[in-house]
Each structure stands twice: as structure tokens, then as C-alpha cells.
Image 1 (tube, rainbow, N blue to C red):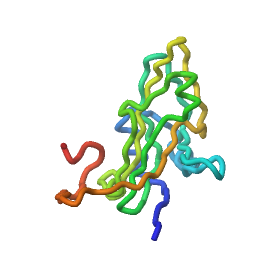
Image 2: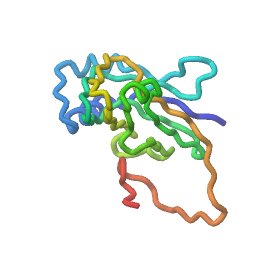
Image 3: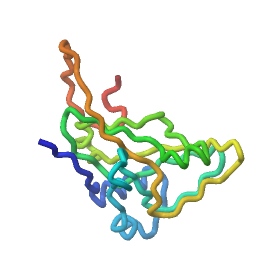
Image 4: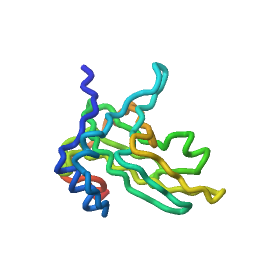
Length: 167
């Protein structure tokens, strides 16, 4: 049975993430209310577009962590892989700082509510500034089925967020 779906994190989880990341947003409740769930652009699209909760201005060499306001519930045999939108990679050499974001199924239960954060850097070789409005698609997530080895012995249970297993 497929239980895969995107949901918003709570307003308090979104506020905490924004505060922790240094965003001083006077209208945070309005921003939260306007967060869009990821969706596919066409019937043939593999990726679900992630949208900016607020506008960003990223100069060459600048990095930002985007609190998407999203979490994802999915079957245990799936992983959500996050990539930059290909058009932004072509035009601005925009990259994810971890190359490919990996969202495990048990991240949904993390202490931060499984809040998906996406860290991007503008590596523009033409010295271009990346200016994106609120609601603009900037990344995409693709669901991939994965398999375990027959001798897999993983027993840890996730408690924290990113990097919490210390492996």
C-alpha cells in the first residue's frame, strides 16, 4: 500500500527553523499559510517541485538553507532524493551543498517533525545573482525504491534530524 504524501510541518516547527537559521520574518504566519505542497509539473514529470516559502537573492558564491515547511510520509522502502531544478543548474550552476539530498522514511518522525531543509549555493561562473520570488520552484524531489542486503543489521532508531545518527 502506498502511503507517500507531503505535509506541512507545524507553524511552530517552521518558526523555530526560520529563527535558528537567522531569518527575521515579520510576516511568518502569512508565509507559512502560503507554503505550497510539492507537486509535479506534468504527467510525465518524475520530480515533485519544491517551492520557495519566501523570496531569495543569492549572489555568486552565496549559500542559503531554505526551510521548506515540508515533511514527507513515505513507505519504508522509499527514499526521497532532492535535486536542484535543472534550469537553475544550467543558468546559475546552482547546487545542493550535499550534492543530492537524501530524505529517509524515518526522518518523518524526527524531533524537528522531519522538516525538509535544502541548502543551496550559487556557483555562477558569469557572476550572476540568483533572484527568485516567493512560490518559485527551486528544487525537485524524486521518490526511489531501495533495497537492503540480506545481512543488513541496522537497528538504530532515528531521534534527531539531519546527521543525527552520527555515522
